[in-house]
Length: 532
Image (cartoon, rainbow, N blue to C red; front, side, top):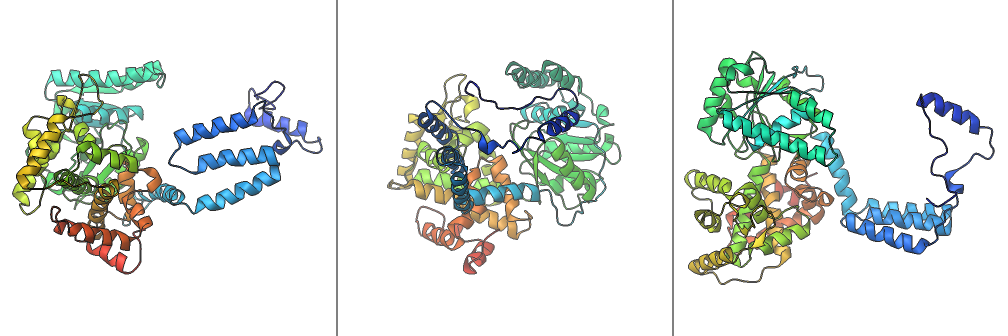
């Protein structure tokens, strides 16, 4: 503000409504009434100020056209007068409303609200009371899950099998909160309040009073069986038993209990105290009131919950597997990990597939592929990822993955060893490397997501297209301004998507079966329709 200018006419102390009414009566006799439009706009360096504002907006909102147009509107109003400024604003508004970014943002807005609507679960379904929560496992995921409930003021009991693991988990929770206090994001008294809600135990008996119990143990069906058998023996009647599994069969997990109606999947995303997405996996026998309660709990802990049916990988990980398969084929055909990642990140993803693998741990994907080789021997994978894991390059946690990492740092540095490994493998396959465009990289990865999503919709695993998009916007770093994989496919035209897939199917080094359009996608494209 410049000297002599006012931003506020009055600051009300005490009762706001009473003070506001008194101020309104005070100024009411003034005629004409003071209007903001009559305030004089002046700045000693007006042009320079607008240039600075425009450059700032471009830097922080480079993928969104509207913020820069807002600066244009303000400039027009100050230089040409309010009436002309309003006309400029109207013109920009109408033009922006038709942009892909506007459509994507509206799609995301309504999609987030629609995600909580489950077709056969009425809004007035009675809910179970959730006043205490148990979490089994104090590792990275268990600790993050616990923080969500502590943040919401809900008491949590964490169970571990060994005191050392329990102490380590609590120390990590404390460290996370202390970091927030240090940054000024959390008041010290709030930190103490949250930690006071946390209890620890080595005994399942201490979970008897919990209304909701979430297991976050090792992703192996035998381990899950042991946990749920114990829970079935100690949990009170009506307690909700949830699994944080990311790929395993929730129906099978439910069968380990005598109360399958009380079992549900609650798949949090790492770091669980940060990521917004919660995949709620509905088992064959999951009760409607359990489902409705978990969706309400998700809102309480400020998560975007999306319901998925039971299948290997549910919505998000089932799709990402196909995305990762294509990324591997691209390496065999001539790309480097850095080239693939840069192309996808330029498109708008928060992180490319190889940086993502290093962050999550490449050994996780390796374990899934080993299972696939037995269960689905016809499914083709590039062997590059297996070769990487055989070298012990699991990612950031080992200081080496698709990239090299300096001790204590997360900056991904291209690895000469990995590039040579890929080149050697390529020679063994007899593949002559070719130059692959960024456009092809993006299309192959994104359309792999789209085709698998179409299968998921047709199978009824996802209720609607916007649910798939919400999973990818809130859990997998898909660019918001593109609206999610299916919204993006709609903007490209499904006929064009199918034509591109047919072109990829003719690539002798790709997998022709992989690019067979899902029946739903083929039908929508033929009829000139869209997913949404």
